[in-house]
Every structure is written in structure tokens, then in C-alpha cells.
Image (cartoon, rainbow, N blue to C red; front, side, top):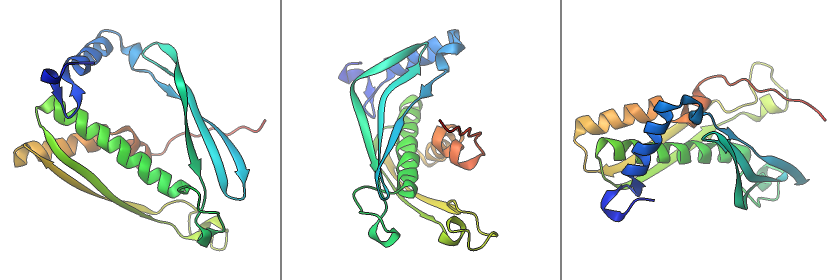
Length: 185
């Protein structure tokens, strides 16, 4: 990627601008499809594999597959070997917001010196257990505290926060209904 003279927040500005230019010239390059295969192991423990994706007009195979584990804490009858799905959702949100902050700040000329997130979410098991049909089984609220240190002016920081909330894909996914198709095989 770019040399150190062109890096901002670890992002090559030349590469980022080149990607934006290519997508503007050929919008089909913007289409991505992320894929995973997941397998139940035992009890509440499962394992997901991520080794292929489609993007920038072609299929990509990772040189080394990536893996994520999921489980439940002992309080939810799991073996506590990995984060549960609610915790994984928090990770997905914070990791996506992190990328969006870094790339957006780089494009705005802002240098980030520190960026961290504190997240929490709520759920009520009575929805999952179908004990009260007025309670949904999913997460009821996600609270995110953004801790950002950077060289931006207060106005730039406000614009950066607004841009992240407008453009973060997982933030958008969690805020808006997503069509999910489930088939059995």
C-alpha cells in the first residue's frame, strides 16, 4: 500500500482515493458479498469460517481462512469459550465504526491519536423463551460511547461523528430492518 508520507490513521490516502475513483467510474465495483459458513459444535458453542468473498468485480479467496467462535456464558448454560451473539453484534458494530472513523477522518485530514468504544446492550430472555409475547427476543437497545482523541476542530469532530453515523454499514444494518431469507437444506 502507500508509503509512510501518505498515511493518515494508517490509511493510504492514495489507495483510498484510487478506490473511490474506480467505484465512481464503475459503480458495479462497489458491490460486495460477504460469506460465512457456520457449524454447531456442542451445547451453545459454534464455529464460523470466512474464506471467500465477492467484491470489486471478482471473487476473492483468502490465503488463510479466518474463524470466529461463539458460545454463551455459564449463566446462559454455555461453556463460556467465546463471546455470545449479542457480544459479537457489539463487536461487529464497534469494528465497523472504527474503520469508518479511521477512513472518514483520513479523508477529512484529521489525525486520530486514540479511538475506543464502550458498548452495552440489553435483552430480556422472556422473549427468547416465549414467556411474554409482548417482549421481543432480540436486543432492545445498544448504547455506544465513543472515545475519540484527534487534531480536528470541534466543528470537524462533529462532522466526523455525523458522517460515521450516516455511512457505517453495520450501524445502518442494526438501525434499519434487513431482509433475511432463511432456507433449510
